[in-house]
Image 1 (spheres, rainbow, N blue to C red):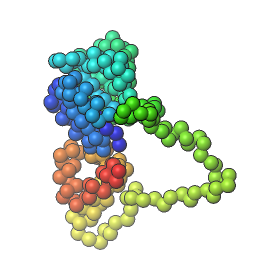
Image 2 (image 1 turned 90 degrees about the horizontal axis):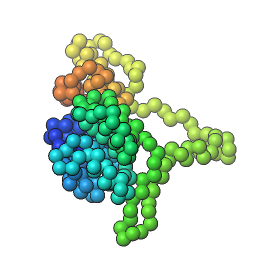
Image 3 (image 1 turned 90 degrees about the vertical axis):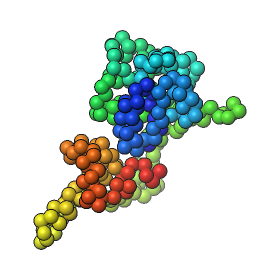
Image 4 (image 1 turned 135 degrees about the vertical axis):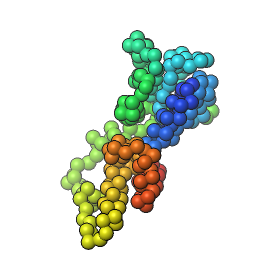
Amino acid sequence: MATILVVDDELGIRGLLSDILSDEGHTVELAENAAEARAARERMRPDLVLLDIWMPDVDGITLLKEWGAANLLTMPVIMMSGHGTIDTAVEATKFGASAFLEKPITLQKLLRSVEQALAKPSPRPAAAPGGGATIYRLDTAALAHDAPMPGAGIAPMLAPLPTGPQSEQSFDLDRPLREARDSFEKSYFEFHLAKENGSMTRVAEKTGLERTHLYRKLKQLGVDLSRNKRGSAM
């Protein structure tokens, strides 16, 4: 999972974005102004930055230009604004932003933009202490084309057996209705948690339940949330 820096002067927006992204398994750092953003970017070297345009001290476009001029745009930056225009979006892209989100930001647009920004195969230079050699992250996806084909001196791999809850299961119906219903519901939620890699946000969307109600329901059914939490084994 990625390390994401959220820069916004509104406490409520920072908290909301942090909850959603953390629920997706990302590590989230928060900053409420440009000064905190500079310090956080230097300290943590984020994989992605969500940057608000309108901030009281230094606006997001100015900070974006500053990072670009100093060769510090080693990560994708998604700009955010509640008063954005097409010209603003074009300007942000011109100075290195990978995407522009207009507030209020919908859950689907946020997750899609984050996923697309993180998927872009660009080298990530990291300056070594003392001016040492530059280190780049390896793009493993690009190596897939060079992988040996089955039969070329290497035995083909067997297809892995399915793991985790399956979409088709059998239930013992010769039992009280409440027990049978709880058994079905537990299996149902465990299946969707496994399918969505433990993302409570996506499961809530899929099942049509509010997240608060979903948490209570899973706790009542005794569902182990830690087992499916994305990134828990990292």
